[in-house]
Image (tube, rainbow, N blue to C red; front, top):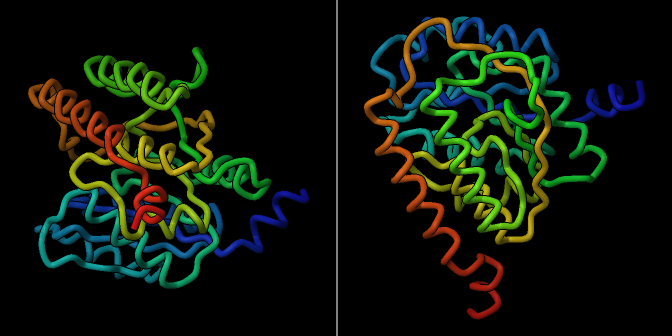
Length: 250
């Protein structure tokens, strides 16, 4: 009960990047609002060519930020972090607009931050062997396993679900990511960036569902290309100096 009271007093921003999600966005917004009416929901409409922004605005439970063109997931999420930083939120939740994430699971991500056990918390589908819920396609699970191995080598920590877009960040992490969030397919690279800059990362087991409408931007034909590209970006992130070191060296 004590944790629930603390959650109610938090200033939480739920960042929902959305590109052509007119069929999913209403259920996503209602799910978040029903989970906690005190959450501030910010939909980042990433240059959608359908009615995503218009439909989301009709719900009157979220702020809508429409980008003039499609920046990709990195640009959309960074826009959300900028909003959260400029408006002094305590915690930012990254929550996909395709309906795969479950808002009732948000409190699981909040708890380690409230207890000051982590700066960033990742909702994982693969933390435990017998987890329930949708766990992605076979090809993507192979890629996620490869990213897990690379993370263990690069940062010395097991991250079982590097590509998960269901995450929570404290105020310190929000400030850093508002100006340094990776572009393109950024989730695995962000893990490296956070760890190199001495942020505490934790994974929490969560349940996810399969999207009902639409399809992922990463189809089977793109999976191999995606894996190679992400591995290269993770390698480059590992080789770069930390932001802290750059500041200290001028």
